[in-house]
Image 1 (cartoon, rainbow, N blue to C red):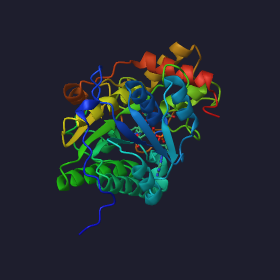
Image 2: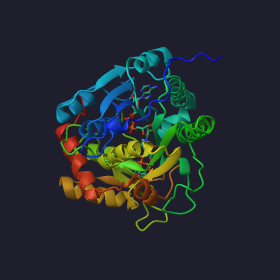
Image 3: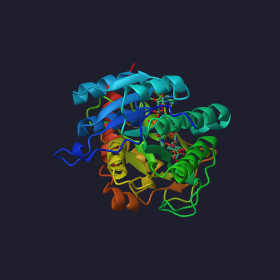
Image 4: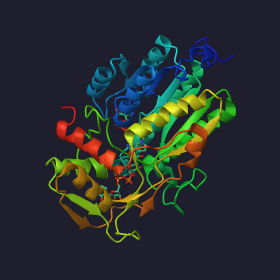
Length: 361
Ligand code: NAD
Ligand code: WQD
């Protein structure tokens, strides 16, 4: 007989956990919780009353945001510096807690880098997830929210993109996300006690309104919003706008930017959904509205009062013209919708960037 790694069966979320607000208070493991989206989600979930344990190897983050999250919320979270691929280390975390749910953010995420060094991306993202799932099964923790990405759609046939659209990622990073989605669906087929919410984020931007936590890229930013904010604060001389000949109103790429606090709230809603034993469910988390690069520059200039010098350059390899979500399913099933517009996104990024020009250093 197969030896169980612990004696426990599945931990269902106890209905006695209901408090006045109607939120089921859970003990949650957050992988990658020190990162950009993870830290904002920790803050939101602590404020909702959940108990949080973060595991993160800090490969792309620092411990500082977790200290700030605790300062802001006045609540404690447990942090364990653990690499997900190290099973024995992670097993000790499972053995020490009785988790009721997991939110799995941990992963490498730089699209360009994933093409240059695919093997570390496959090892980290796939093997890390496999180790996590093996321990979830062994310890009977069967509620999972997984960070997927709109990148799984690749070049969309049409917009807005629904969850039923064809998938076809065009880079190794995106393929790790899609492979993990398949792994999760296979796992559920074999073990229907699992409840899994796959969340496909569009373009997360913004920061918590306190200006104390935000996005802090290790190197020169790859993504538009942190690059714009570093230009505004004087850390970068000018922005290169990648492509001005796309079939869009102003020729620049159009994306669905979503405020990270709206995204964080989506995770709380997804955890609630898991309490209804839905099996595997997949949701787009986006606003449903696209903005061009030039529109984002103009919005940032308006809220910051700083000029954003830019030059039009060639398209970036692998980029697509237009990408935005149909978020109707998340609204219908989760009661979630993005509330914040681009002004608030830019205002909150500027507050964070201007108060922390060197990030968490
Ligand atoms: P991030 O890099 O800020 O956070 C990821 C965290 O995971 C980091 O703190 C990193 O140190 C940690 N990590 C990586 N590998 C690990 C491992 N093996 N063991 C332990 N910790 C590990 O990224 P983010 O922007 O917060 O993204 C969070 C998740 O959302 C990622 O899975 C990412 O792929 C996904 N996502 C991000 C975006 C985006 O644009 N930011 C869009 C769609 C999906
Ligand atoms: C947005 C727009 C660029 C930088 C990426 C990943 C995706 C997801 C989100 C993880 C595009 C343009 C950008 C710059 C520019 N991440 N741009 N100058 O490429 O839509 O999505 O992040 O899952 O998987 O691919 O986001 O912010 O890099 O670009 O002109 O210096 O800004 O061409 O039109 P993208 P982005």
